[in-house]
Length: 131
Image 1 (cartoon, rainbow, N blue to C red):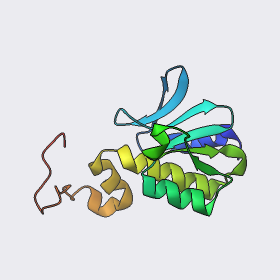
Image 2 (image 1 turned 90 degrees about the horizontal axis):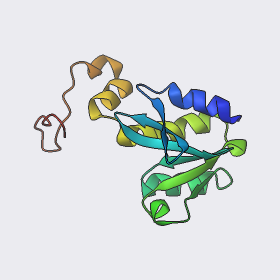
Image 3 (image 1 turned 180 degrees about the horizontal axis):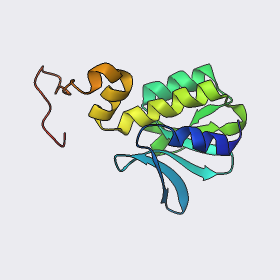
Image 4 (image 1 turned 120 degrees about the vertical axis):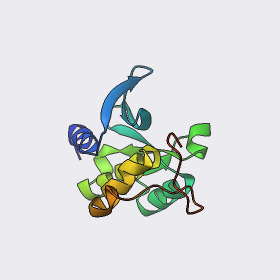
């Protein structure tokens, strides 16, 4: 998949914005980085270690852990030449959902319930603002 099409796909995610981090393009939602574009043809995604393992096992030519401490935390490289649109959208949506504000994720996952759903703190109580 051409890198410019991947960038367009990333920017199609709700509230996604392109910015810069250490001179490289990055992509943010709610001010938090969920992906970067450090080299031509390479993107890095902010995944969980479990998501990283799943993608690297399913598509080893397309995904691999970054070879450093960030990789151990789930940051994953993706190579554009080995991505198709469906796989890219799925992977970048996972990274987006990992850092997006919960209310935005809830609204994206269930649009009808999004306006009336209150994020929970995991104990059945509404989450306090800023959490």
